[in-house]
Image 1 (cartoon, rainbow, N blue to C red):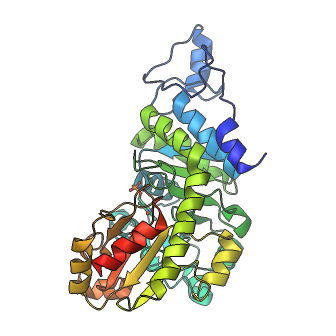
Image 2 (image 1 turned 120 degrees about the vertical axis):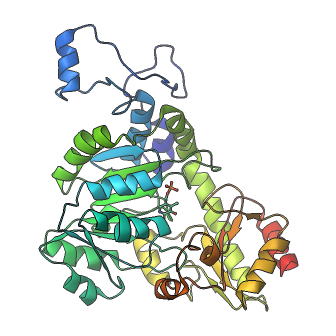
Image 3 (image 1 turned 180 degrees about the vertical axis):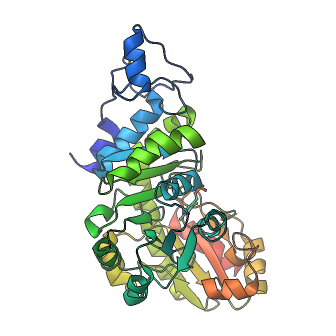
Length: 389
Ligand SMILES: *Cc1c(COP(=O)(O)O)cnc(C)c1O
């Protein structure tokens, strides 16, 4: 079956007692057993049955199974935020004295996690230019526990050659972990490009309308010890499993993901093309524009769509602030891939705690505005941008 069908018609683990069509929310903590030896088997993972909702809950399991069916992954684990998914996935591979090879072009909290939090536990960041494969290859050594990358970086919109990076990593038996939040996993197979573990903030496209925080670790099974540690050590000991209410909302989101995403990506492309011809805008950055330097690579790796995030550059920070204050329809807010269009000045908000020197190193400019394009009529979005300019 095709992804649109799988997203809706993947069967539940067990049919609901009342035949409920939408998965009920199992809003409970403990599960009862008729038989004590079965209970012991469940606790010791000899049989698969929920016993306590910090480790397993049927509503969450159902959500995980749909993602598994959509991606063809070996294991999927749902967490209570994108950062929980990222930190748990990384924690499954790091240990003291090891290093993580990654980039300075990362989501702000991920960058801080790798360069501050893990460093305190003796894990070293090796932040390189992922566009330079020799640089990446040179950085990987016996102590490297993973290569971590984002498939399209935010807000630089840089695309690395994932296949080439995976080749050099796998030659040294190092797993590749990729954050695929910016283009949904229903559009492409990152595993075919060599990604071993995919991490996603399901807060974004999947939640649909910014309803709930969530995260996914999608494990393609190339390094079996990772899932073992994630499910039977970290999920239990750190307690960041997704809650059933969130799984319910995000399962509904998954059912409409494709229609929403196609519309958002088409709106983003239309808007990027329209904004290219506007005088007061110095530049438009969108990977889906055919003259973008990453266009070919993006099409090859991620298919015909290029996500719903684009940036524009104006003359100065002051111009950006004035522009943002004048918007009437587009919302001044962070988050990505809400149903409504959002605009933000990343340098003063998401990256506001970084000193200018570091912003320069990260290529986060004071002149950049980031848009997350929603489901509205594209003419209305363009009109709002034009009046604000
Ligand atoms: C939002 C985001 C995250 C963090 O996800 P949360 O659900 O907010 O914890 C991680 N990576 C990327 C690329 C994101 O856009």
